[in-house]
Image 1 (cartoon, rainbow, N blue to C red):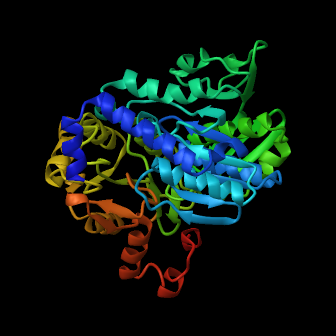
Image 2 (image 1 turned 120 degrees about the vertical axis):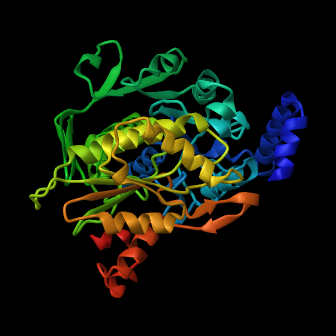
Length: 448
């Protein structure tokens, strides 16, 4: 890890770019340019990529097409799937080309692939024939790595410039205009706004939107969708997946059937515990995504308790050494929306965890948040345990930053096995809220 950092400091950027490009070419050559034999759908944006990938794969499978998918959550080839333990959303060139080759050999017609800005920067997307490009949304992230928001946006734009056939774009995002100008044979847009209807281009729009504690409901062209997922942002994600389905000639009825089968997205607004209080785990690690999560949970009113609901928030700052600008903002958001705040360690890498927490704390200190409801606990397990001890019937505990990630990344390139959901379960066993028999089960969803 340190050798890579030293190399980046002394090797000219154009040589590093050539190195990454050459690896992409060699990888594609060694595996026989497999993307020419399969239809590849690339999903990019800041938030929602993994969920859109998973939803899209479900729709394609429901339509009878053998499908492969690759996201930060998991790898999938047909009925076989396994977790993504790489701590890398978009694998390196050789692993990526090898995966495409496996999907082709398995007889898959489609591959749905999460495309990251860092992956584009390192040419991991090159020598992959993308048929369809999907844009979810855009907000500041990886700013330091890219040298500014404009360069970050340009990295996302490159997927669309490379994809000539179908473009699917979220019209509600303020950055949509940058993607609209890229030519394509077909363009499909999605929106939650009435004013986005147009005779000039196809807009897939959600109407009659309802967000309740049991899930989401909305209508697309007189077809009612009822999803067992939390967060109105998941309507955007569903619309993106529906647009992919429509672009491939799949009916809304099949899209509905596929999406309504989804009971949870691993580590994405995943309800780990339902009673006597809710415990939710989410991957949110940007200001925009964290704000959406907090707003969603504050808007959902419990119906079985008369007590005033309380939101207990456990958070850190994803990725030591990167995107330091957002740390005080995350703290400020927590102070605005949370009843109690616990800041804790997340993925410090080689940075001092205490320093990371002090930056988050600065955002909280500048607000009117009561210090009596604030806790600074470096040990993440102890932080989660404290949140559960504070929770009362009807409350919600939200643990953000890691989602379903299986590792915590610490100094010297070390990875410590970790799973927020598993830790919640273990802590509740200690509190005797859960039986060991239930805890032995494989499904976190069964704990509710």
